[in-house]
Length: 250
Image 1 (cartoon, rainbow, N blue to C red):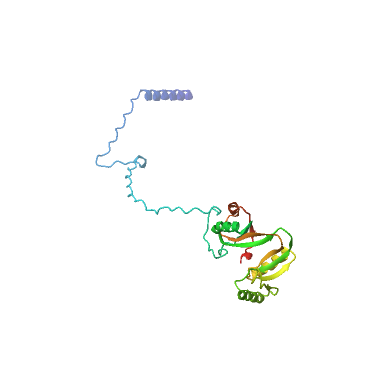
Image 2 (cartoon, rainbow, N blue to C red):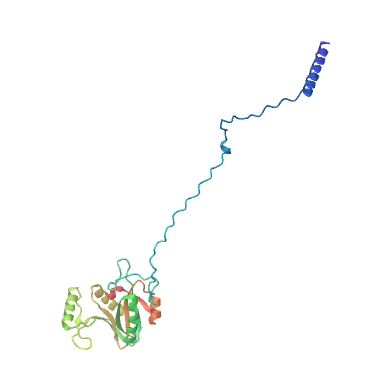
């Protein structure tokens, strides 16, 4: 009986609490907070607006710089390369650029060689004509120094040749080649070229020539400037340009 009475009591209490909660008056809302007028309002960092940036001050206008007038360089010769470089006409090559030498020919006569020489001087520091006998019956080769201005000059040259260690020489006294110096005869071109190269290395303008009744042709040996172009040179003078050992140009 006691347990039943407790159950009934709890049930009545629950019903009473539910009826009170249902029938109670709504709570009175809290009055709105009005901050005092003499106190600054707090503001969150996120609520702050960025201050308008000041307009950039325009930089003072700079007057245009004065420029020198452009000067167009003169056009290069037709047989020259596109970028000429300065050089010394009296020297075979500059200190940094190795010398380049070419042999241009053969020409049919001295007149054609002279015309070609005028063209090649624009792109060469030195152009020297050279006569060579070609074709026909070549019986051998000789090495010779060109004729000197006088017999005294030829004798002085012969003394210098002897002092340089060359003992096979002969001064031509008469004829068309008077005052020239013969420096030996050889059966083949190789021996004559070797002899001429050794004399050239010693400072003598020796040249190797064939012996026989062949046709005499003219060649132009030149020391090229940096702008020299062999293909353009061939097109300008209508004869081939072949590389040459610069030692033969001394």
